[in-house]
Structure formats: C-alpha cells, structure tokens
Amino acid sequence: MKRGCCLFLAFVVIMAVCSVKVAASGLLPPESSPLIRHYYKVHNTCANVEPFVRYQMKLSFDKDKTITPKLIKLLYSDCMVNGCDASILLDGDNTEKTSPKNRGLGAFVVIDKVKKVIEARCPGAVSCSDILNIATRDAIFFSGGPSYPVFLGRRDGLKSEASWVDLPSPSISWEAALAYFTSKGLNLQDMGTLLGGHMMGRTRCSNILDRLYNFNNTGKPDPTMEPTTLTSLQKQCPKKVKLGQPNPLINLNPENPNNKFTNSYYKRILANKAVLGVDQQLLYGDDTHDLTDEFVKGLEDFKGGFAYSMSRMGGLKVLTGTQGEIRRNCHVIN
Image 1: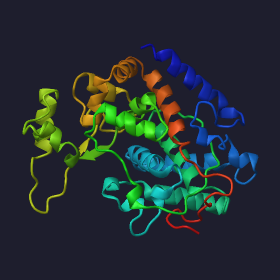
Image 2: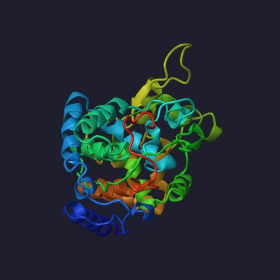
Image 3: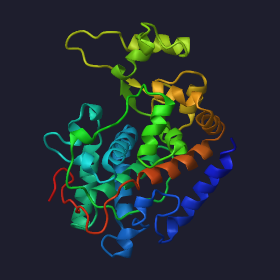
Image 4: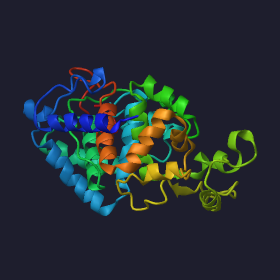
C-alpha cells in the first residue's frame, strides 16, 4: 500500500499547527478535542512551560541517554491503560505502578525534577500529565527524533488501580495486538508505528523465553528467528536462571545500544531478527508489512509517522476543565 504520501501529509498537518492555537481535533482521537496548543500561554498561567521543560530535559538527557526509552514506556503505560491522566505516577498500595506488568518502569525521578522546577515558577498551574507528554517529546527530540507539537490542557487523575493494567503479552499475534490498540481508540497505523518505540531500550529475558525455547508450546525455538540472532539471545537468556539470580536485561534493538532514534528496528523485522514476538508479527499482516517496508526505506517517513501517532496516543481519554486536578506532587493527590 502507498502509505508514504498519507504519512507525509499527516506530518505536515501536525507540524502546521505548531505555531497556532487550534483545537486538537480531526487527526486526533475525539476525546482529545479540549486540548489546544500553547494552553498555558493562552490562559496566562505558565507561558514558558515548554522551554522550562526542555531545558530540564536537556540536562537529564546529557547525563543519561536511557531516559528516552524510559519515558516512552512510561507514557505508553499511562495513556494506554486509563488514558493520559498521570495515574501511572501515583504511589500507594495496588496502584498501576505496582502491577507486575509495569515492573521496571523508570524516569519517575526525572518527572519529579521537572515538576519541582515548574511548581517553583508556576505553582499549581501545570499538570503532571502535560509534563509527562512534553518531557517525552523532548527526550525523543534529543535522541534524534522529531519535535512535534504537544496539545495541552490535561488534568491529573484522582485514582490509580493495579487492576486497570491490561497491557498485552509481548508474544501476542499482530491480530491480537491490533484488537488491543483499536480498543483504546488507535488504529493499525498507530500500532505499527508506536511499536517502533522498541527501536531503543531494554526488556527482560522472561519476555522472550517462549520464543527462545518453547515457541507455541512446541518445546523448540521460534523457527522464523534468524539463527545467529537466536544463538546470541539464548546466550544472554538461559532457559533457567540460578536461584537468586536476577532476570537478565537485554537490548530490544542490539543494533542501537546508544538509544538513538533510528529505523533499524524495522530493518531487523524484515530480516527476522526482532527480539519481541509482537514486533516480528508486523511481518505477517499485509498492511503492517507495507508499513514496515516504508519505514525501512525512509527514516523521515518514520519520524513523521511517529510524531503523528505519539500525538494521537497523548490525546486518549484525557481529563480537562474541572475534571481531576493539578497535582502539586505527581506521586499523590492533593
């Protein structure tokens, strides 16, 4: 399918709104419509919030390049579970962050630092949810990715429940993955593009042991995995770890150890070298295969598509107006 033109057009349109005050409607999920560009400037509550956040993110990024994949995962874990309401940041028993599916999430300290700076300059004005969205965009940019407009005006949720966390297994089929994304208000293009976030970062060996040793309960490895990749992953991920030994961490994209924004993730899929099963599954759907082909051929197409889908995800089930609150501390309700 000829998706290049469509993705380029989407990117142009989303960039066009960067300097004007328009409702985030049309291209974005309908629930995001109350969000606007330059929300805090329009309402004269914190006009320079984005420069404040970007400066703090540059300081954090210069110290730790892993901040980008951590923030992408944190934002995904927030928006895809109960909408973009920063409920993933709340502490307490049985909150979202205590779910086994959210084990290993990071970047909380970075968001805390940014929030502290913003509160000192604009007390009680900027939500943790908006800060998380802006900070993730800036980290992506510093990694070599696109800088896209973040529509603002979110408010923070008042609850967080571990039982809400329905993040799917990393070994599901592309059909099951698509069903999950569509249930959240996203589409096939968003799925294939957002999974590209696996271009960087790490995962636990436990997430791929089935592919390495017991694919579909056959007692054998996934036969589609490229042999040298299989051997390398088996060396890093033993079938069983010794008592007390931690679950090893491995790179999601061995070709990108420095966490750069790259399309090499899609190249690995075409070569049957994907680490996660759900990533390799993109090869088996006609539309997702076409999208993979396109992103392999054009990094700029991928940048445009990623900006577009990140903006769409950032608009899922947002709280606005008098809903929720503006937390003074991202970890607890006021």
